[in-house]
Structures are given as structure tokens and as C-alpha cells.
Image 1 (cartoon, helix red, strand yellow):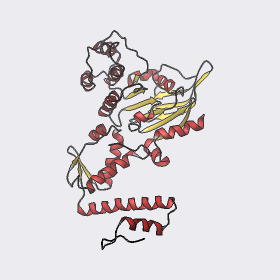
Image 2: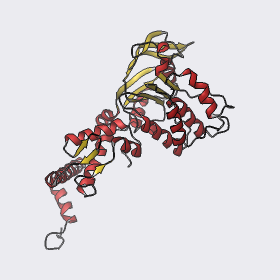
Image 3: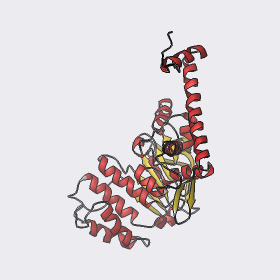
Image 4: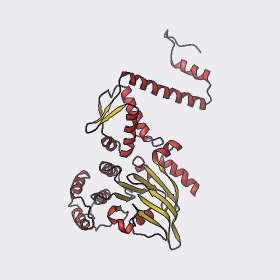
Length: 231
Length: 126
């Protein structure tokens, strides 16, 4: 599991996270929800060690982010692969960094996602780029997968392909996926546990189905309600 | 299948299976989709499907045989019971809603009678 213990982080005068204590349980698909600027991206970056807390600590199965690099696959919003590379080039580039690279899975998913390894990253559509990022990240056996706005600006057909890939591949109990997004509706039926964050603070944590039952509302509506009060 | 996201999804999965059993679309012994297949088709979390399947096993509606799959497990009696349970649930919900709209028992019965002509085939004059 991933644990945040009294984590605070500022960037200059901006408070990104304020005394955040939360656990992301192992083996579940977790939704990290909140408006833009809530602290979602900061949280994810902290888990992979791209950021360090000013106060508090983040651990993954008890270890520091620096010691857990091989346990976590991260799909950031920005493109980190070079536009002149083909998909095959990008895979070859990343392979040596990951001891858990699964070539068979890579080939299988290439087909499943309707991608061609000769496609040039800079030339393909937005949807295809999103699928490529997913492909490169799940072609590993990493027990933790972090996704930052994975479906942002993606057309419906591609969205379905991405969701199908996640479901098809998902190893319940063994794999933990954290999906960070402000577009809750897209992932509503995928999420098992939720963490709502706003203004750098945790607003609500719970099981999706239990919350639906207790509040007789969808996660989208729960978030609207929460942030109406927060602001 | 479209899910109503304001209610627990696993309950809707169960209700959907129950309806199919009651309507005879699924019969005793029929094999249903594996959890993973169901999750992929419905585009939902496999754990949610697992919860539904587990509940259905506890309710004695299905039986999972390792390596073979999950099968419908309702005999005639259980099916009758199921039908009655579902109907009772609908009746309870209907009454609750009508009461929330401040209709009393007399008015509710009157409206029902209007919908159902009496045995002799004549509508009651009201």
C-alpha cells in the first residue's frame, strides 16, 4: 500500500498539499478525484519520487519512493517520449530501465490497442498517443500503476479501448491502480476506492459502492456536493 | 448494460441476473460469463463483479466450479421464491413512493383498481 503521513508541500508561497494523511490500499483501483489544482498531480509525483514532501513522509509498502522505483509505473500528463521515435524505438528506449519489462505483453497489447510499432509518436493522433503511453506503462509487471488524467481529451472509442485494456489486464488483489482525474464520470464504474482532494487537503475517503449506497448518489454528484461546500 | 451510478453497481448486476432468471432467459444449469468477461463487456471493475458473483453464491443463485465456470443454480422453488421477493420489493417501493407523495391507502387502492378491471371484465365505475 501507499501511505501519506502528514505530508505538506509548498511551491514558493503556493500550498500544494496540507497535512495529508491517506492510505491507498493494495490491490484496488483507486480514484484520486478533485478539481484542477487540488494536489492530485503533486501527490502522484511524490509517490514516484519526482517531488519530496516539506513535511511528513510517503512510503510504498514501507519503503521510500526512491527505493520503490521498480514497483511503480507512472503515466504523466506530459509527453516524455520523443516525437521522432517510433513506438518500437520508445519501447527499446525504456526497456533497459525496467527489469520487469514484459515483451510478450507488449506485443499482445500492441495488437489489442490497434497500434503499429512503426508509428511515429509525433505523427499519430492524440488518442493513439494516449494508447501508446498506456502500452508502454502496462508492458511492465509493476504492482503499482499511476495514471494522471489518462482519458483527458480522448475520443470515446479510444477511451473504451483504454478502459478495456485496463480491465482485461488487471490482476485483482495483486495490482494497484491509482487514476487521478477531474473527469470522474469517465471512470465512475472502474473505481473501487475513492480519495477526494481539494485545496491540498483530503476531503473524503471511502469505498465507491458504500458511498453510493449511503448517499444515494453517484461519485460525480458526491464530488459536486463536496466542492460546493469547500469553496 | 448501462448502470445507474447513483446506486451500488454490484446490486444492479445481481438484480439483472435475477430478472433474467425470472423471465426464463437464464435457466438452471446455464453457464454465465466469467467474472472477467462480464467486467470487460460491461466496462466495470472486476472486483465489483466479484462482489456480485460472491453475493449470488451466498444467495444460492449461482454455483462456481473451479476451472469450469459459474452456473445458474436455481430450482423451481427457488425461482418462485425469487419472483415473490422481487415483486414484494417492487410493491414496497411503490407504496413508499406513493406515501411520500401523500396518497393514503384508500386512494392508492382506488388508482390500482382503475388499472385492473374486476373479474367479470367490467371496469368499476368510480
